[in-house]
Image (cartoon, rainbow, N blue to C red):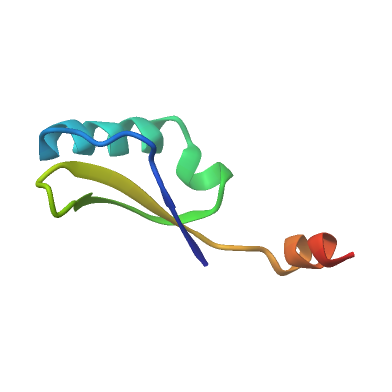
Length: 65
């Protein structure tokens, strides 16, 4: 499993939550095998979005060949 972070940071938690909702509506969670999407806060007080992606065993086998 791998954490993938969205490239943009937001000033409010609401803005980051809206980004999570857009990703879920767009089907990013189902198409990229995202197991978990959440909002996190940085030390500076800004908010970001992160996704926990799962890897297929067949996908990792293709990469090793």
